[in-house]
Length: 141
Image (cartoon, rainbow, N blue to C red; front, side):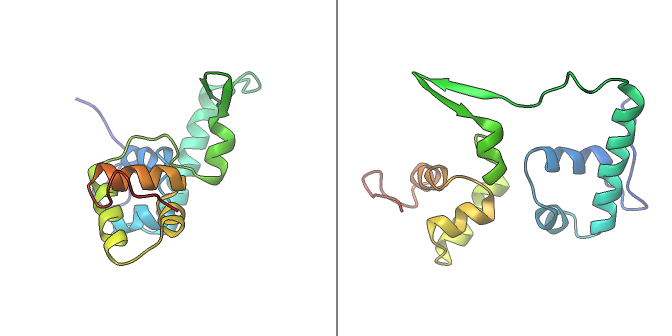
């Protein structure tokens, strides 16, 4: 049986919140998904994770979370891209597809959707095509 640390009396696991944050969810998105928690709960969760890491690791100087993808001769530095688009190259989930669909149908533009969903505009256009919300031939901008 896996043990979990719960946030106050909410029944929500600290690991659930850390998983959302590690996938690039914003604090607003986390709170929207779990309205019973607060910003303070999220900050406390992050502080707990930091303290656990500090207890486990003595020397963190050799840890590098930077990654890159090589496409032919072009190198994409994921860390740099994610500085601007935190969810870049992450797998789309059902909730994100629903949010994209709803916001697109409400009239949001590609750049607005990219900002809200923390993805690159090209990824938004591609996903809209995959979901059948725009035609394959339609240019996205």
